[in-house]
Length: 416
Image 1 (spheres, one colour):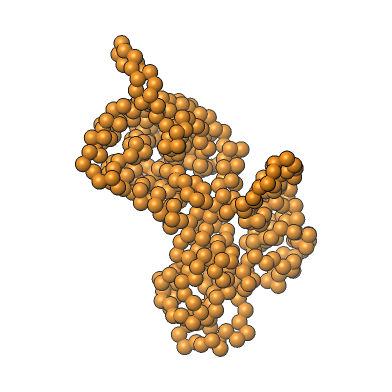
Image 2: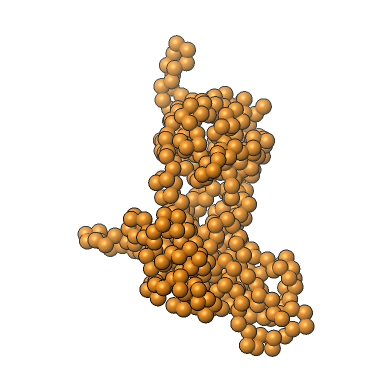
């Protein structure tokens, strides 16, 4: 019997993905563990591997099309089977064979019970993922009242679960305005409408959730980095350009060092408990064409400055090429965002849930500073710590920021 190739969940929270490229064509043999296709998620493009040996009998979701998690995307002919085994074949997965873009009003796979639980389904105009449809039927959520947060307004799992949690099928009041263009465009002149990418939609959703549900507070500090710049110049004196240490590398090391001194800032908030993280894993924001992504430097406190620098360069390159794997960007207990290279003096970053803190770093500029009885000009860098007040108190945030400032201003302490 032909084996169905199912699109798995390749990262946490993944609802669907685009089959970017098929690496195997119909009629080609594959072995278990061999790459079948490149799949584009909202975070990265990654390879999807075969789970068994066989021959690609039929591709059901072509390159460039979107498919839901658990949808049948292709059929594998197993040992002893030929194309005749596909005669009369119909996918037994959770999505139509033509892919997930087309939603019918009455899918044949739904039971009468599901139909009864969702009488208004025919009135749903937005596309609905199969998973969201099943959850809605189980929880009795009326899909006709929902606004989807998925691609092209598609209703996905999280939309149904939110509606069920609040006991209403109406979308939040702000959602329709966020999901549609302004109705009054008079006077703005000519423009080009640029469709949202999956990454941009995900960024927008997560940042909106963070800013509206997480009680942020902010702490600022000015760091004298004259000693740091002098040490950096000394370290880089005999290094090749590609291997030189950056100011950002020192900042990452100082963040890790401060977390070892104030571990209470290395926590995650959940409704049940505050999770005290044992590993110091730092998410560092990287700009890509699709938007910001935060690859993770794991065990940052255990690595040398040079090792952190090399790993960060490698992760940044993978991020810009869209080649990050889920383990490269999932997790992390603390985030860092540096806009100093763009000349930004200071800014306040939005926390990346479920983390509790993010440090925003601005550009250094020469300012008057006091040294003993003298006032001299020195390069000063302003940093702003955004904190989730539910899990980190003001005193803890202040202690962490003081530890970070101490490390930056005495950079030799970061090397021991």
